[in-house]
Amino acid sequence: MHVVSHKAIRLFSAKHPDSGEPLDRWYRVAKRANWESFADRKQTFNTADFVAPYVVFDVGGNKYRLVAVVNFRRRVLFIRCILTHKDYEKGAWRR
Image (cartoon, rainbow, N blue to C red; front, top):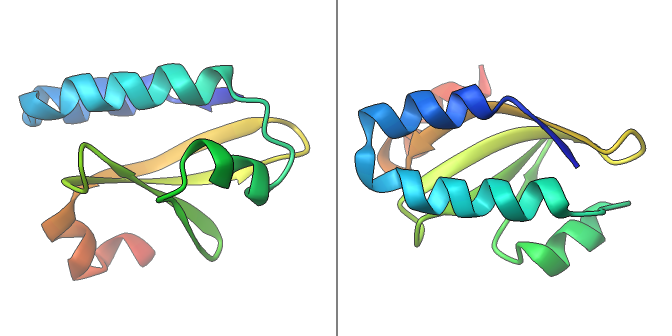
């Protein structure tokens, strides 16, 4: 998958230093992935959910949420936002 944008990971990690390692690990796995469907993605990250139109990944032992738009046909994953679990629960990311 082509992951757009790693900059979102860097910026979030700067604010939340303990997120750096788990997000980097997620990034390395995602960019090597060859997903053709949501089911393929579920084999790699079984805790991720589809919250239309986004795929929401649990990162760092459920401490963070990475919200992305995935185009399986073009093999592109666009990071929409990264949030703490608390901020994710507030739901503002859906607007």
